Length: 74
Image 1: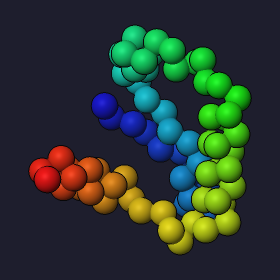
Image 2 (image 1 turned 90 degrees about the vertical axis):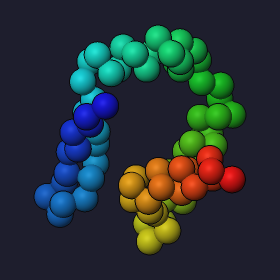
Image 3 (image 1 turned 30 degrees about the vertical axis):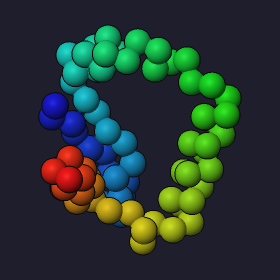
């Protein structure tokens, strides 16, 4: 997958574009992706609010993937 990022005037990432073929693969793999229950949407909103208030606690996607790879080795 080769995502393209969109940035605001301050250089902060604000969006991601993925090629349609990648999107189609994701929606096939996760066919129920649009059926997000209300409780889960609320949880996502809470987490997004936390991220807005505490951006210093974010890690890069590369670091996140590295951590996932480490946990798979255990």
